[in-house]
Amino acid sequence: MKKLIVAGVCLVLSLLCCGCFPTTQLEERAIVQAAAVDHTESGYAVTLQVFAPLESGENSGGSNAYLLLEGSGQTLTQAFEAAAQKGKEIYLGSCHTLVVGGNALRQLKGILDYFNSRPQTRATMQVACTGGEAAALLKNSEVTPSPAADIEQLLLLAQKEKRLPHSRLMDILSALEDPTCHAVLPLLNSAEEQAAPPLLSGGLFYRDGTVDLTLSAEELVPLNWLEKGRGNLLLELEDDSAVVLLEAFKPQIAVSLEGSKPQISLKLRAKGRVSEYEGGSPDHLEQAELERLQQAAAQQMADQLNTLMQRLCQSGCDPLRLGDRLKRSHPDQWATAAQSWPQLLWQAQWKAQVDCRLTTYSGK
Image: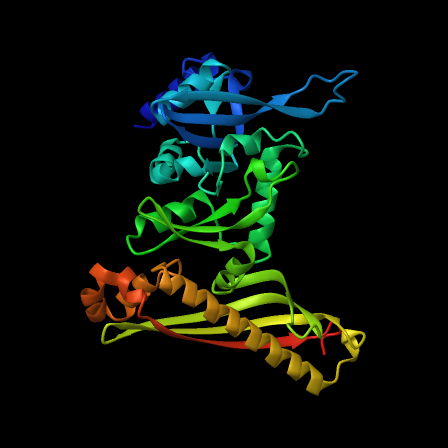
């Protein structure tokens, strides 16, 4: 037996060394950094930003550049094949960003399934959309170091600061596979609206091929408080007395059914510190004033959460997986609510409670 194992290992090593396995050299690949997918009357159009190393020399300085490959076809596979014919073998293992054009949103599930079916695709690839043509964002030569890097940094920073829900490929696909849940897609301003770097203009609430609700970037912020974790979000109090830096969020969400009306309880504990204070240095705040600021911040956050819930329920949108929570906590109630959950949300009653704990920079 040992001799057979040794012989097998030697055979594999010999095959690897002699190059009997089919391999693709790095220089034969088009290493995709970002992809844009649009839908046209004749099918799909893809635009790919690919890595293009520059030779060291007088004009390059040894730096890296990029180039764009384009292809179109009746299917997404044909579009990618057309793009490959204009360059090299398409490699998606380094694709960090996918932008879907407004005209392709109906086909979003199929587009994401295509990328997910490719073995090299990253599950952490960022997914975003735009109201206009997605290709135009990758063709924007006004941004540095590249459109792909700029879009990725924009999305990652917004997620880190708790201004945007996670929009990785695995997050969007998970939401789309839940029949009661809405996926939240970051909405980038279209190239027609800007000649400079792209901006995050809001979010789309998407399910079953349709957009049920669009929120501005400002309206979208409270949704991110309901995801446990750390953040770096500035909250300016409405009376202009202070600016608060929110750094940690711990939500509790409970759902039940009373008759045909969903009862939603939102409890949020937030921690942060006073970043700016109109009366002087935050370090010199009296305890009574600090408590007042805590109460003001908590009330303002609760008001924003209530406004958000009103928009979501009126549109029958469920990005918080409330239906799934009801299913797990009250399976008997869910059995009667499953078929009409979006309609039941229109009748939902909710209450948001926020406990905000603040310190000063000195830890007071």
